Length: 238
Image (tube, rainbow, N blue to C red; front, side):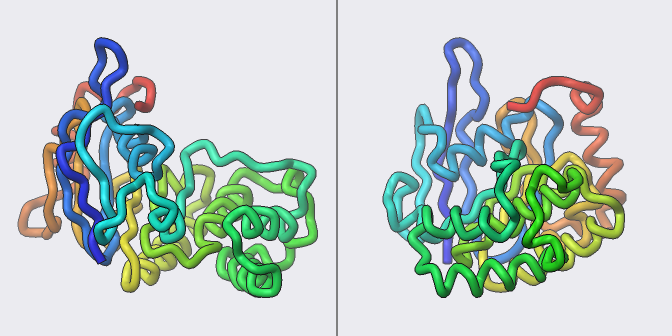
């Protein structure tokens, strides 16, 4: 299982959001760190086929990002997760499963499993508009797992989660990384420090660090803040 990102770039008029990023990712959890505007979201949207790269290629086991077969192995939770407020949680998952071409009996079984996995089994009959921010985010995580993806892209997935939910989520992601490629974008170092098989860092559209972080290298958060001292205080996500 291999995701190959080869010299991928994205340019908007005079601004380069992603600048010739190259990566090869295998099974495991890959934590992507970067301040607002570093290019994380733009890169992830290209990995999901939502944005077309200005240059470079993206393939999963030889399949190009534009192929239908690529979409079949992909699960995605965007930073701004859209939902239908009048839908009940279970119906929402069944609706998305239908869009993914999952047969209804399988979809119903899978949706029930996922609601239990994200601790929403008692809320499956409730309308999403009644959910808290953390509950909506957990539902977003569930929908990303509907097709049992081999490539899971998560953009700021712990937004809105309380400390207890963060721990539960990290344990879930660590388990998923055993059989799939998980790319998790965040600006919160603690979300990935102890579960990521390797750490990636982006700055101004470029990949500036890739590797397994070990305690012998010092404090990861201190290193991260040093790299992004100018950006961490604000900006707009790119």
